[in-house]
Length: 253
Image: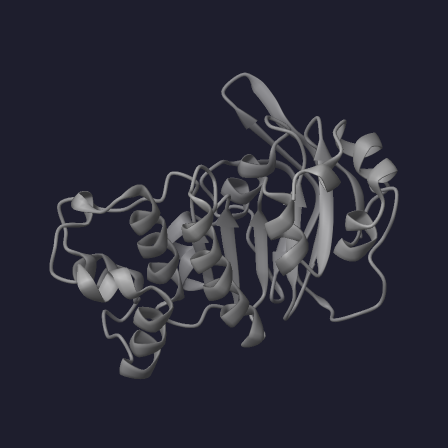
């Protein structure tokens, strides 16, 4: 991990596809990110963890160009993202699932899915895979997305960004507030995406989900990265969890 903010570094593995170095970003007069250092290895799942309000969502939004990078560097697949707008960053190969889902309620499920495909053409084999992973999408294919339940909207939000392969997926708290049965469906789909060798950076408060999917973890506090390492190391050390985040995540299975 670049910079000195992290206490630990992830072990050897795949080279980073995304690198944040001393990233600072503001929201209005509030200095939210104050030196985020993060490596996201290619072909692996990195979990971005920490208490509420420490800057995790802001980190994803800054990578996507939704918040302006004030200082530091964001490198992706050999190019600099700083100064690029969200559409240019999306065209570079990054898919984003925001916490608020970003569903167009007046459009049908099919129309929402077509918006996720940059060419508006959906490959049938990939569409078949997604409708198998999320059966509700096929059931409500021609219905307005606004009529879906919260869990079904989250399925659509994930499927829309997965409708074509991306170099990197940024996913913000996909299981927040969902029933266990829906969480299980989402985890199954993300496992399949992971099995394809996808590179994922994911914010997740459900530690059981983070442990099940994550290869690496980075913990944030007060707008900075304070630890990074293997997910298994963090999952197996309740004292480390308590010291980094002030709660025993092990108890949140």
